[in-house]
Length: 159
Image (cartoon, rainbow, N blue to C red; front, side, top):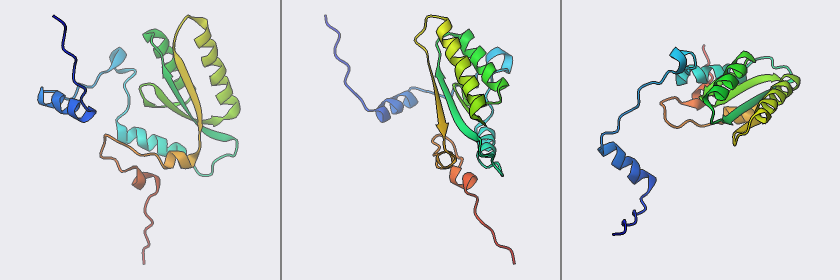
């Protein structure tokens, strides 16, 4: 007997079904005994904002996002450690932000390119220059952090 076709359901409906089935938040996962643990979201946001709001900012520095999708755990771990040693801020498991010179960024780019060419893979690494205004206009979903208040603090006048 043929298996009946699954009816298409919306993402909202699928999430409702998971919730009613008893889905709970997963426990915090720490890889390598906590070495690769990501800071809580408010601390990551504060670090991002510190990068964006540095005063005065050298004209030679630029903000960059480095994102990757790497299958091999060892390679992924080595790249994450390399980026952290180069002064990049880990935003998510596979997303880093850097505020650096073009020369330093080019060095990071060349190293990542060389690493990717060493072995047979279908991995991808994306390096994107990011304008300060773009970072300040980012929106957050999934947390009670109001990014607008952090990036554009209200002016207060005392008499």
